[in-house]
Image (cartoon, rainbow, N blue to C red; front, side):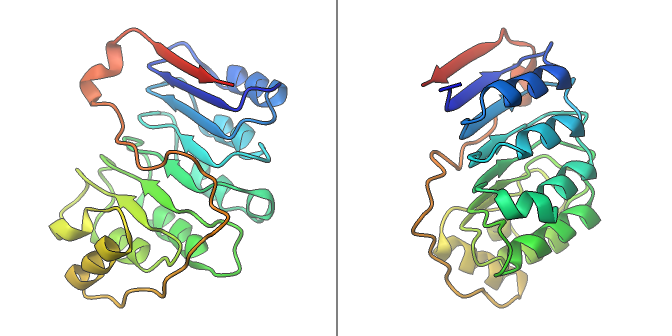
Length: 210
């Protein structure tokens, strides 16, 4: 129950039931990276979203995730309790542009509890310029990556600070948002590039910190 961080690459056998058990027994988890776990579905996101201290979540290259995962994370119930600051759903190719635009609208709400600081959606084939425009106008979002998506200006593909976001806004022709400094941000490591697709078949590697 004292486990605070769990980072695993290439856990091919992990299923939703395992995530459910993990979330039930390790309720103090802050950082969860379960990358390259192809058997996970939207149900796994539902279980993880209930963790009261979760601040950093990566489910990159989870082929089973759909728009329902974003809807779950942006739901009123999740927003009312969330501490989520960093989210990585790179390579989740079922995510649609319409759903990400709705998610961005929730992030942009100043009254919303969803105050993301970092978002990675690399290699999501359905996402393009409209998503970049919407995310660039989210005042809380200081780090964002949309590489290997549909065509968009190079400056809008990735930014890592307020200055980079301003450059993205200029390239997209949109008004930059007002600065939003979150002094209580305790999300831990955030802007981490997901492992290359070629690593999907490597043996699982685990790093667990108490």
